[in-house]
Image 1: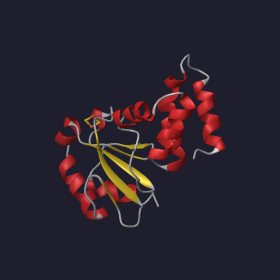
Image 2: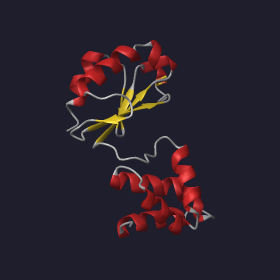
Image 3: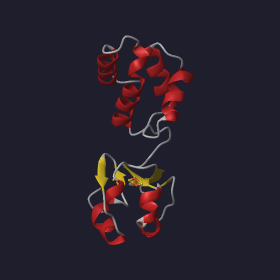
Length: 154
Ligand code: FES
């Protein structure tokens, strides 16, 4: 069940659109910001609020890769796997990351601290390789920088 706070924020967004369904992405982002990911019940609740079907909301949620439909760790690492990052050293960086965290792509650490997922180009190719942790963009990465960056996310 959505909290009153979440409902209020979604209503605020919906009021800006001629059709309430126009606020679907915003609504999903609001839910995810509060809960970390978007579960099935939240999809149904958002659908009811925005006068949509759950399938319509789910199709939006699964189309946009920034919306997470499975439980994740406290911090989500979105590592760019597109061509510029690959050319600039993605593989050793990813290997170091996987070894340090003890997980592969699509997995969450046993302590629930990190989830590691692949992502298409993050739009910072001139500073490849790059990844995001939560909303923070990290660029010009190399394996040595990774440990210091990870230490900032408890
Ligand atoms: S290819 Fe990685 S940021 Fe563009």
